[in-house]
Image (cartoon, rainbow, N blue to C red; front, side):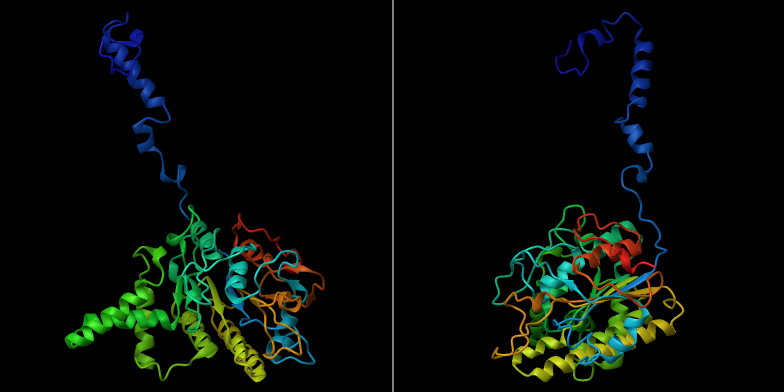
Length: 411
């Protein structure tokens, strides 16, 4: 017998007592019944091994980062607030957690990038910049973000899971996916930002032609620089046709120079309003950040930034209430990325990098269908609970998140 035969000697058809035809028939029957047989694998439905995403029928969720770090005093204190709509109107509509805090027991950073990832992943992790830049915050989350959980669970295209980001924090462009082996880039959200518009515009200008050789070379170099900002996408970081059409309308309205469109957090509000109208996102995160301009040392930059965010939130809420696709089916979650320092003797006021108690003190407000109204949960809760709560509201389990679901917010 051939020593390479997979059959033991007793099973060799030439030596077996039964006729060859009966042996082959038995062999074929056994192979057909085997769960690992090629025919069984071919016949099995794909859902047996990789369940197809379901259609999403839950509420829309708009997560607003009341960002740039804000203190409770200037935001939710009725006597001192610079956010009148948020403090006097919206809080009454939902469940407020005025004693939310960023982990009080470990030495983690209280800053914008880290705080954003605490919200998106539901975990406190220590992050290190992988880009090698001074003050860089190019972080890679180790566990999935809300966008990845949602898109892996449901049949939702990337342009309906949106991260809207500011022009001054380009590292946060890429917080929409993790390096987790079971999730990652294929389940990322789309990002709307001036950086993305510039990349779109350069591609379009190069494809339209009419440029001199020197201009072509300059634009190709600039485009390559923009496209190489995130090596993790391995060439996949291309904007979908829906996002391309979004930017085409933006270009038609504001032109190419960047001198007409809004800037700062007003830009984010405009992007969010246009996204609601044109892209119909099911999950959208708006990364406001203007209060952080206080690092220049002028206190009014901080307080004015809070007012700009408040005005933006009011516009977004009004747009939702006026749109039948969102009215009565949209939950808002509004929470800072971090707090700020209360040290009155600091040379530059309102810092957040010194790991002080007030820099860890934040808050959260949930309101919308299915959320308790007029509730104030006046006890300690954790910042990372926001991710678990959003997962619960949208019908997926954020399995790697460590925060609990804030059941007090659920009606």
